[in-house]
Image 1 (tube, one colour):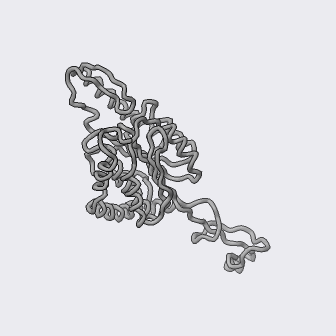
Image 2: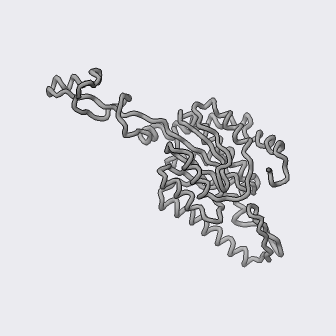
Image 3: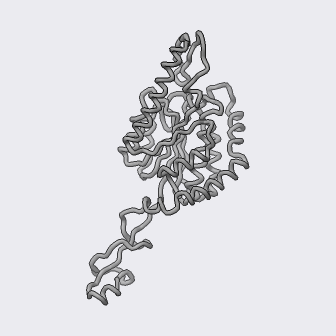
Amino acid sequence: MWPFGKRREEQIAEDRDLFDEEFQRRLESLAIVARRTVDGKTRAERRSKKTGSGIEFADHREYAPGDDFRFVDWKLYGRAGRLLVRLFEEEEDLSVYVLLDVSASMTLGTPRKIDHAKRLAAALAYVSLAGLDRVSLSTFSDRITSRLPPLRGKARVFRVFDFLRRAELERATDLAAAMRQFVASNKRRGVVLLISDLYDPKGFESGIDVLRYARFEPRVLHLVDPRDAAPALHGDVVLVDRETGERRDVTITESVLARYRAAHARYRERIQSFCGEKNVPLVEVPTDQAWDQAVLALLRRGGVVG
């Protein structure tokens, strides 16, 4: 159910405009810039320790009966008289998981956080698909609410658009519970691009740790509405939690606003400190910042694809 007064069909019509022709043109330009930005950086990171019949030499081992004679190093045999087989490294496809927060707090802001986040998700998916990675998308609130199975090839981006258009908004956030469900459903490890405002009453840390402990590689795109830090409120107001429905009567004074701004700054510092200590790439994305600039910032910080 869409909880904020719009029919689902109306919301889908609005979301369709998020991926218009102008967006798609900028998307293709971004993919080209992304390839240049990360050229040569990610290939080494994707290399597995498996050996087989790949294309890059890794090591030698002693010949054993039954080995393929094509892989015998005959030049080395001619020089040293040792019968050795050449081993090669195999490249594995990089699995990229885009996880989009669709909890109720993501509906706030102008533009709405969820609109900005959907464009980010589409852009990250496209850049990954253009890099020939395996890409899947999931939405979450207090659980995984929908999932798009792995795709390959940039022509599949239209399935990504359709999936994001149909992503339904939910109420509560429980990042840890959602990430535990995600980990249990995805045995293939890879990069996780977490797009969220990180407003979780239980704390965001445990959810990111679930990914880390399961040997996924989380990258965090933290959606921030600049007005969250300085709400235009004065006098007697009733504050309503968008996700829980909890109501609180508050008298807003300058001293109350000052305490709120300080608490908000501490929360952002807490996110930055946690991600820094855990070596989790973090990009803070103000909703008044261009979505393509946020994607490039993530790529430059050791992001995802190439």
